[in-house]
Figure 1 (cartoon, rainbow, N blue to C red):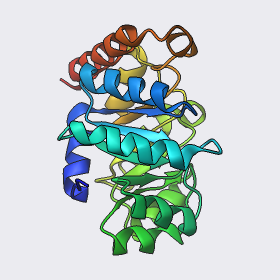
Figure 2: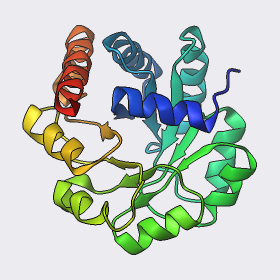
Figure 3: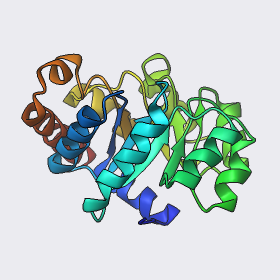
Length: 221
């Protein structure tokens, strides 16, 4: 099983500026989404722990991802230490949570696994940083908005923030986030739409990913 250093994962996140975020109960659909996203240009992908069979699908997806030498596959929506350990033992390259749960920090640090907790206040962000979080998820992004990021960046310099939830693959939205100072964005249904899944239009998904990455490159200049 391939492994990546926490530094390498951060660098890959920073480089592309985007992480697709996805869950599906059908492993074949999950594989197709992963394949199309990778072909579209991303090397960091977050599968979410949202369904009853999420662990089984994730472990199969991890095996499928072995064919892509540089693909980093993490697990999101992890809420406690027990589940954190379960997924790290299974081979997850990084752990993402929608909440700040301090008990998850030592598990990740002991295993040299990148821990990305979810925060919605400056107090939570500073607490996460003190607990050793190198990348912090801003959630829900649609509620907090780029203005929140702009306001806190001068207070705590050097933060590596990843807003998720409601981030849109448009120039206006992505420009606002990156100008505010985010390191990368997490994108789910705005990128991998219900229609794409229902029609199995994987070429459209690949195109969506490529276009979103091109916009990010443009707005970062």
